Image (cartoon, rainbow, N blue to C red; front, side, top):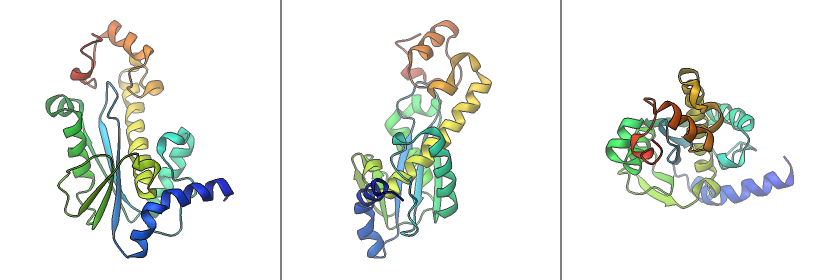
Length: 204
């Protein structure tokens, strides 16, 4: 492991290490897909052991797609708990994206049995344990970063499947985000069942 990666892991573990050292069972939680015009919002809850540390665990946005896929599989092998929850477009439209994200996170954590939950930004989930909301948590906590990778890869795989069902929108390339290509396709073809109606009112 090179010096740069060691330094990065030290920064990430500064939040987690005191909990590991105290013997606290804690989970990291994050979501992917709050902003796109289409697809689910996906949440992940992960309990990681203190050793061995996975070299490439980091904020999912800082990793290439290929790297995320590899680290995702490593996390699944090593983690003591991995839970995934999601909310679909209809639920997002019905309850709004924040409440849908909360519901996805509650689902992801349902079997974790952690004493502490480190959560990227979101508050008041009502979990059976202490909740610590951390702004930009995926850049400040190893466990949250691991959860960000699980959520991102899970959602990206869903959007690849969506592209096979609805190839006209280009979901493989933009994963449902509001790119120029996506908006032009929306205006040409109209929405599909995966589109969030409350997100696309200005485009169709």
